[in-house]
Image 1 (spheres, rainbow, N blue to C red):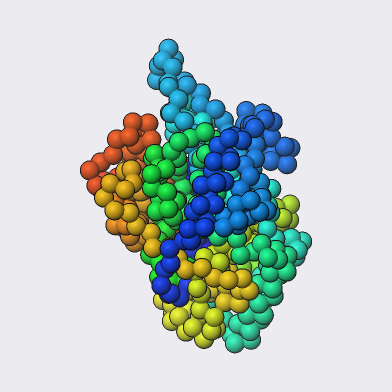
Image 2: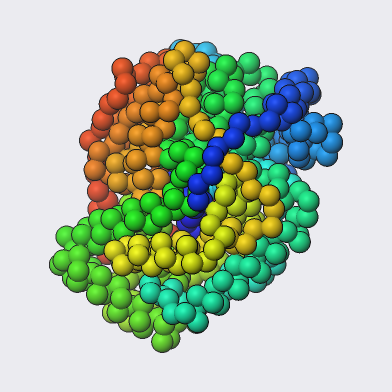
Length: 542
């Protein structure tokens, strides 16, 4: 499941989300034809390189950022067949030492970033170099972002009319009726048909394996013999696929907010685990609000805060705020707070104001942004296509209904909305793959770094432990008792110390390390409003 356009700690980047999931099926090794095709495409890209120049106005990037494109095969089994172009962004290494202006920092190559999704663009990533937490890395590396296949201008994918995508207000029953379930099943079937109709025969090629292959072609186009990569959220999954497919091509690799790569988890079971984890994080948020009842007046226990939230949801069901914020929009806004605790003060203040008679903050934060409809629809289409293509999903509605009815009894906050997000995969019309069994043996892969927050709901901590077990020589750094989704370059100096030591010097702890949590947010009674639909932003846009 994906949150509505969020951002990671990488300075305000993106979103992510993730997960969704499948029923089992034995994993299969990728075909030799695709591996051979990747080698051909990478060699071709290495010769062509990337012609960087001014970014098109549509990218909305400052002059400091350069843009270009890289051609990759739609189908790696046919490397000389149809080609698609991926958009790429870059800011060159500054060489500036933040602590010694007389010292010139040597360049270490390109640092490629993916924010997750699937369906999120990393085109804004190079802007993080202006943030204090990233200046050291920006001095040594060209910061490179890109839009994966299907995203933005990279062979864009669409499944429905963007004008119809952001409909509001919406309902979000925690225990849906039979008639409501039938309505959502019909919508899921229609969406799956729309994806097949609009994408045609190309739909099957939007996969995590192809995202990993595209990454190797991008590496070659950048002139890098080996890849230095930071992947957040879903970016950790196809980063792990890359590590398994091309271990000798890895220089340094960071997995931030790691997804569980166990084949049986991709993607249906990961989805169930995620819904359960969001219930715990929702409780964390309510406890924080209760601890600041003197500011928000929503109750001095988590249970009282829940009653305030439910009171607002019932009122919005009867009369949507501003005609466009119903219970569904309220839930979406508070879901984003499950990803990032810096949203907590703003969401709490908006709820408090609404219950006291002022709906404006809630409308600003939870209301749909029609100007972002095309981007949102595109991101959702890519998310759905990649996850539905990646692995088998249950095709019998009874399985979904059984599993999620049980789960909703103990985790009602997100369970059913997560189902509706992913239900098109039950009726998918493109062929399904089998998830790759990600693992590397001793000495096969350079040491890698896994970063995880212990209470991350979007990527539950068990995923980091599983990835750590599967990648020989990996090191796991845990932010204890914290739940921000994506912690690289965020507010925790301990985490950033390990990140910088690894990327700048190649230094890692022996096997595991832990950091104390970053401070909880400070309550604010009148904060500057942050919308729930944020473009993958950096510093000033954050």
